[in-house]
Image (cartoon, rainbow, N blue to C red; front, side, top):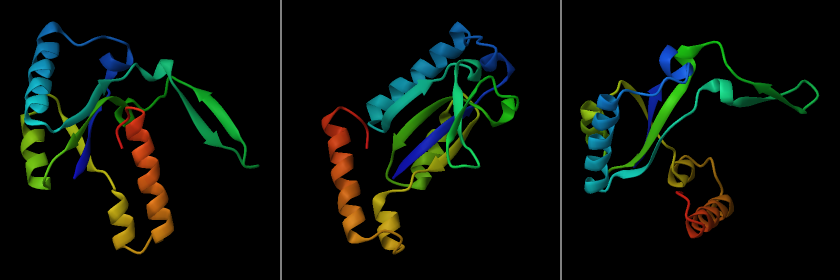
Length: 141
């Protein structure tokens, strides 16, 4: 099972204020535990939304680019981890040890769509091929 662990943004992260040395050490210690346990697939901090943009679908079906910053800090993400664990219970235990307040969301797997008859066998095969191609290029799929 894969889970996305989301670190919510706050006024400091949106202002570009980097974490203190103490927080960086706590996060480093946590990351080291995750790596040693073999559950961490990825984890990164994000620049503030002022350096980002969003795309929006326009009424005519085109795309508009909206540059940051974005007003609702409580809806923004400051960083993330991607975990692979055996169960929701294991994920809960890792989340409880995290030095930050986080939101945890399970990631859909191709099998979830197949089991719900939401994806044809052909589409599932294509998805598996694409994921393998991503892995060949060093990505996480």
